[in-house]
Structures are given as C-alpha cells and as structure tokens.
Image (cartoon, rainbow, N blue to C red; front, side):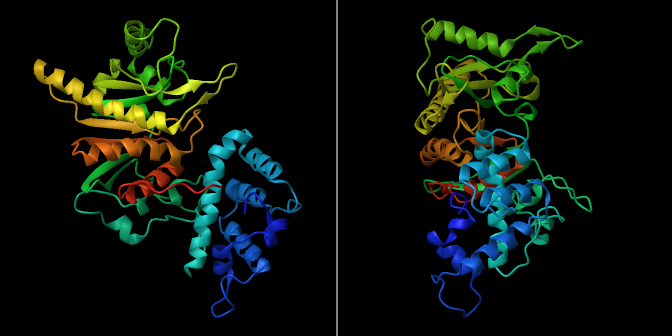
Length: 390
C-alpha cells in the first residue's frame, strides 16, 4: 500500500484491508471497496492523534493533500523531512515505526475497539499494569505504543520500564530472556557484553553514540577531573589484533575478539566480546553486514564462553554466566531490527536447544525496537517470525 499509494489502490489486491473495511453482512471480503479502504486508512491515520507520526503517515501513504499521485520515492522523501533525517535513515528506522502505528490503529478498528491515539494516556491494559506473573516476567503487551511516542499528553504517563523479563522457548526448552531498553553503558552485573565491530577491529571514536563507542568510552580509565588515563578497551583490542590478525589485513567476518571491560568492571561487567560483522565498503563510510555472519559470530560467542569458563575453573574464578546481545548489524550495518534479531536468535536457539544454561539479555535503545523484539521473543517456538516488508 505504501509503495502504490492511494491513486493506484484499484490495482492492488488487498484482501485483509478490504475485509476490514467491509460492514457486517455487506458483500464478501474479496469484493472491491476502494473508497471504503481509503476511508479506513484515513480513519486509522487520523486516530494517531496528530504530530509528526500522523504527518509522516499521511505523506508515506499519499493521504496528505496533493500527494495522491506522488511517486513512492517522493512521498518517502517528504516523510523523512518531517523527522529531519535522511531518506535512508527514515527508511530503516522511523518508517517502520510510522507504519506500525497505522497498523495498530487498523487492528483496533477491525477488533471493534475505538481507535486510540498513542498519546492519549497509558496504553497498557489495567490487567497488565496492575499485575505481573509470579516469576516477575513481563508480557510483550507491556511494551506498547505508549512507550514509542513522543507526542505531548494532557496528563502525565508512567515511565516505560527499562527491563522486561520475557518467557522464551527453544528446542523444547523453556527459559527467560531479559530485554533492556537503555544505553549500553547503563548495564550492571552482566558477565559478558557483545559489541559489534568492523572486520578491521577498529573502534569508533568515544564521542560517538554507537554501542562500540559507548563501551569504549565507559571502559576508559579517567582521573578525578575526567581526563583520560587509559583507553583500556581499545588498547586490549589492539593487542589481540596484533597477536592474532595479519598486519594491515582484516579478520574474517564472524570473528570474535575477547577483551577485558576496563572501568566497566566497577559496574560488574567482566568481559567484552567484539563481534566482527561489519565489512567496510571501499570508498565510502558505509558497511555491509550479512545475517549469516551475525549468526556465525554469536555462535562463536558461545564457544568462547565455554573456553573462558574452562580457564576460569582452572584459576578458581567464578564462571561467566550472563551474556548481553545487542541487535548486531542493525545500525549502520543496514539490517532491519527483525532481520538482525532473526540472525542472532538462530545461534541463541541452537545453543539453548543443546541445553546451554545461560542468563541471556538483549539490549536496544529505542522503545519502538523494544516493542518489536518483545513481540519476536514472545513468539519464539523454535523460529522467530519475520518482519513483513513495508
């Protein structure tokens, strides 16, 4: 629907939207009702409640005045301008959130419930907000549109929780995964954190906002005035590269380089595993990431955990038990969050199916990604669901 726009609605076969737009007892779901489908879409978009979300949705679908016949690229470009970001960044991030909000309102309308703007109060049902499972796990429904909107509200809403314990199942084994919704440098008491890296194992500058840059910054040792004393994570990663990698050459995608955590040890972080999944594209600032390399890297992470635990046992040290995984390749690597999660989960599921007993954590920064990951985790039955295309 986004690609075609309103003006080409009659050329599309949209049985679900057509069925949603049908009044009870009025014809069959497959019967064309193009005006009714358009009205349904406009009602759903209007129910978002104004602001940047609604404006971007109107441009994306060709519902804004004068945009019915705009090509999809022009509509996407105008929607990106609403958020003040590049077209590529909008396509990978905000567009998924915008279309997800439209879909949520469509589901509300189809279920007979009144459409509910995301900004008009808490979206967590009272039954979910007032009670919690006895084991402390949070249902995926606890992550709702109330946590992904930045629209002003007439009354204060409770802050969205930053930790969610979600039941999962893999290979016939049940367990729990903790989903963190915050910056990586706020992690506490997790033995190993996985950090995405490029195949040259070159860390970004510490002032940047990526996971790798944040871990480098948080792991650095500083004096009381904040001056850098030791760039611990970078120095250890260079030492590993000097020892195992050929000078001037990259490592194979999927390689994992373990280092200490530097000053993060004060937060209970013991190790950082640098997963080389991003292959620099010559002559550009961009990277290529293959899902298979992500799966290979996470598989290697579990193998390294077993190796280091063997050495820890010999040295009388406590074993490494907890592991935190970000969505590898979902930043500048270009993978969508759903594809990244599927690639990571393939290795996690294989490890759990073998009986791996790990305390697993996933980390995202943006609430809209947390909503997606929570739904994917809650749906695990051996294979997560795939994200539909725009």
